Image 1 (cartoon, rainbow, N blue to C red):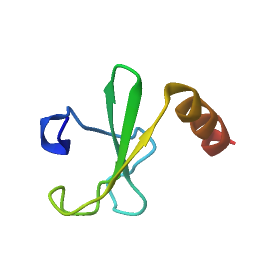
Image 2 (image 1 turned 30 degrees about the horizontal axis):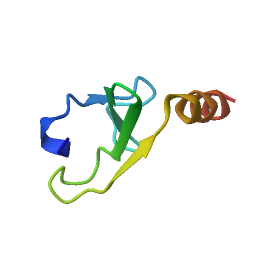
Image 3 (image 1 turned 90 degrees about the vertical axis):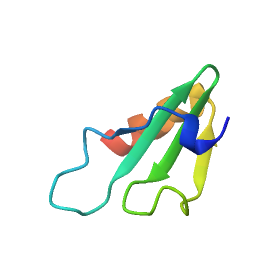
Length: 62
């Protein structure tokens, strides 16, 4: 699935003042992650398994 066809949403931890922001799109079996500060057409995406995403989110929440 192309990055343009995904339904992206901004992380709830991303503030409106800029800074570090993530966008996430969820599909069956894959969590897609990208940097929201980048032009969506030029930004790379990272694909994670749901289990890896859970571990990442737990680590990030610290």
